[in-house]
Every structure is written in structure tokens, then in C-alpha cells.
Image (cartoon, protein in one colour):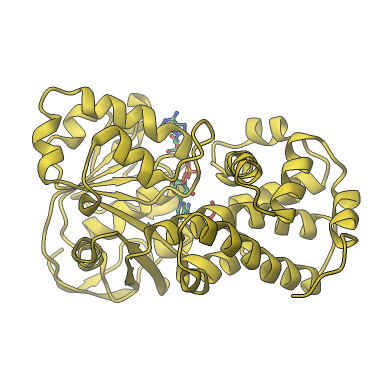
Length: 357
Ligand SMILES: NC(=O)c1ccc[n+]([C@@H]2O[C@H](COP(=O)([O-])OP(=O)(O)OC[C@H]3O[C@@H](n4cnc5c(N)ncnc54)[C@H](O)[C@@H]3O)[C@@H](O)[C@H]2O)c1
Ligand SMILES: O=P(O)(O)OC[C@H](O)CO
């Protein structure tokens, strides 16, 4: 399908598809988000390879032309290439999109940099991180992990965050996101690469703020699910979102993020959507926890990743080390990892010492 008007194979509706500068892209991760980005880019004539680590699963995607496990009902454009060999997948890529769970990114990038010819790629490519999380063993943001492993300069690293549930993006529902890079020209280049009439990007050079906002909101989404699971209503959720935003901002600013970033799409935008949406895996996990399911039982019952679990662990320890007050994060940590009763935990949170807003 060339630029101009096109028919969305996924939604079956007419959409205008803007012509773009064509760069070769590889997406690492065949979950719902990686698959969605693969579909929307290849519908716009970008040569895209979607890499998924399991050969059998890759064969199934290639045969079904659909990801029935993670994104059922969305058909792949003819041009979307599926690959399970990591080396082959990245060899020609000019843009590598990282859409694998945060805790596994270090390993996969280490494999990439071990290839003898990867240095050629590293000199010219751009890495776009879409995974939202904090690494547990180091407390690092994903851009820090990428920089540490690849040695790439900051201008070759970009973040794509914001309120963007795959289930809606893949059906071309209007979505606005943030492209963050310390180098404005990189953010602009990647913004242009992804831009279409239903997927609108804004740039931001505050990469720290964007990453912290997009990662910590998953903790708040678990808390929101717990409130829902316990039968609490809109007052409770509004309080959580507002105080959660204050907590995320306090943490993010202490780490070097800019205060205004937390009022933007990666901040309040993603916080609202994840705390309110039925699509949110983090929120669904919170509901299951409130209904008495164990973390182990939840993780055995789904292939989907709820990043907020490991990010709660990482943030709890980082906040403790840096002496930053994180009452909601601490409460979620206690429920998830210390088996504290959810209702008693909420009562404790509500009856802390009174203070000014
Ligand atoms: N789904 C969304 O709407 C959405 C939107 C924005 C950002 N994200 C972020 O994108 C990232 C990927 O999420 P998703 O929704 O595509 O995942 P998903 O839950 O749909 O699927 C999980 C994916 O992780 C892969 N995986 C599991 N263990 C792995 C390992 N050891 N090594 C490599 N891959 C492994 C699985 O194969 C699968 O592809 C997450 O960080 C998520 O927060 C998701
Ligand atoms: O389904 P969740 O909870 O992982 O959230 C997905 C996205 O981060 C929403 O923007």
C-alpha cells in the first residue's frame, strides 16, 4: 500500500496514510505492542521486520498472518516480515524498536553487540525504546541500560511513551504519544517516522522525566486495579491518580526530570489511561490481587507482561536508597511482595499523618 489513502486491514475503515521518509525498521518483541507497531508501520510502506525469540511462534505468526496470542483479530499487511533469528533481524535495520519486557532488554542487547558486524550498525542506527520499566538489578531506566550495553551516544536513543493501548492503536483509534530524546533532532526524526493521521507524536528532550513517568504509572495502575477489585469507586480513583501523579513527579524530579513533563502525555496522560482502562494489564493484575489471587497464580495464567510488578520492586528500593517518600509505591510493594492485606493497607495509607497538599 503506497502513501495517500489506504484501507486499514485491521479496522476495515478508510484511513489517510501520510507518506513518510522510509527507513528500514526492526521491531524486537512479538507481544501486543511490538506487533501493533509492526502493523501500523508496514501499512505505511515502511520495510518492517518483527522479531520474536521463539521460532515456532514466529512460524505461526508467519502462517496465520495474525498474532492470535497477543493481538487477535488484527491481520498483518503482506509486507510485514517475521523473523526469529536475531542476527538476521537486525542486520539491515536503521531503526530498532525495543518492545520486549524491560527486565530482558539487557540480555538481548548483549547478544546483539556480540555480533562481529554490529559495530557498523551501532555507528548509524537509532534505537527506539517503547518498553516501560525500571531494571530491578540496577535501578536503571531503559535508556541507561541501552546506553550502557551498546555504547551508543544519546543522540541515537529515543523513547516512545504515552497513553497508547495496543488494542486501540492497532484499530487506528486516535492516539497521541511522546518521542523523547536528549537530542531534539533525533526526537523529531523518530516523530516523523511514526507520524500518521491517527498516531500523533509530540517531542520532548526530557528523557528522564518521560521514562520515569511512563514506568512508574504502572505501579499506580496496579493500585487502581486493587481499588476496583475491592469495589471502591470514582472518588478513590481520582484521589489515587492525583496523589499518584504527585508521587511520580517527586520521584522523577529528584532523579533529574522536569516538573512539567509529568503534566504531559507521558505523565498524566498515561497515568489516566492505565489507571482507568480495561485494556491495562497492570490494572487487571491489581484487580486479581484484590480478589485474592497470588502473583504466582496470575503469572501462570497469562503470557502478558505487567511491567508494574518488577518496577514496583525496583522503585521501592531506589526510593529507599535515595530517601524519597513514596507512600503508594510502598503500599503496592507491601501488598505484592509482603502479602499485606489490600484493605488494611489502604486504611493505613489513608490514616497517615495529616499534611498540606
Ligand atoms: N501493550 C500495550 O498496549 C503497550 C503500550 C505501550 C507500551 N507497552 C510496553 O511494551 C513492552 C512490551 O509489552 P507488550 O504489551 O508488547 O507485551 P505482551 O504482554 O503483549 O507480550 C509479552 C512479550 O514478551 C515476550 N517475552 C517474554 N519473556 C521474554 C524474554 N525472556 N525475552 C524476550 N521476550 C520475552 C513475549 O514473547 C511477548 O512477546 C512492555 O514494556 C510494555 O509496558 C505496551
Ligand atoms: O497494559 P499496560 O498496563 O501494560 O499499559 C499499556 C500502556 O503502557 C498504556 O499506555
